[in-house]
Length: 220
Image 1 (spheres, one colour):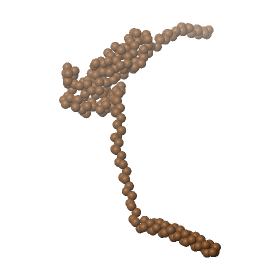
Image 2 (tube, one colour):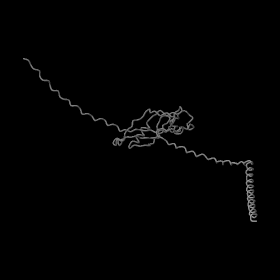
Image 3 (cartoon, one colour):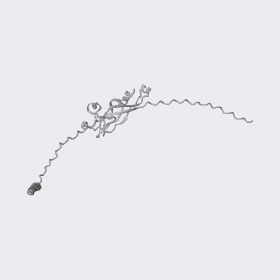
Image 4 (tube, one colour):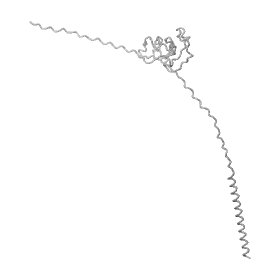
C-alpha cells in the first residue's frame, strides 16, 4: 500500500514537469514565430527632414570714401570739364573778373613759367632782424599770366607786404589745360634770404719810398 502511494506521487510530479515543459516550449515557439514574422515584414523607411534654410545675410555696409584734403602747390583733383568756359579765347583783362572762372590748379595742367619780376626789397626792420625763411601765398593766376588777389598763408615778420608787391608785379606764361589758357588759383612760395653784407674795404697798401741809388765811384 505504501508503494502504491509513492508511485502515484512520482507519476504526478512527472506529469506536472511534462506540462510545465510543454508550456515553456509553447511560449518559446510563439516567440520564435513572432520573430520570424517580423523579419519577413519590410522595414519602414525613415523620412529625413530637409535642413532648415538660412536667411540670406545682408552685405556689410561699405566704408565711407576718404575725404580729399587740399595740398599746397597744386593738387591731384580732377578738373570738372563742364565748368570750363566753351570759349577757347582768353577774355580781356576787364572781363576776367566776370567771365573767367577760377579753377584750383590740379593734375594735367602745365606749370606756369616766370617771365619777369620786380626785385624783392627788404625792409629796414627785416634787415636789422636778419629775417629769413619762406613766405607762402595763394593767388589768382589769370589766363593772361597776371598775378592778383593774393593772400598770405605763411607770413614772415616785416616782409609780408614786400612779398605781395613782388608777386603782383610778376608776369608768367599762363597755365594751359586741354590746349587752352585758363585762370587758376595757385600757391606761391618766396624764399627770403638776408642780403649778404658787402665785404669790408681793404686798407690801402702803403708804398715804401724808394731810396736813391748809391753814388757810383769816381775813377781818377
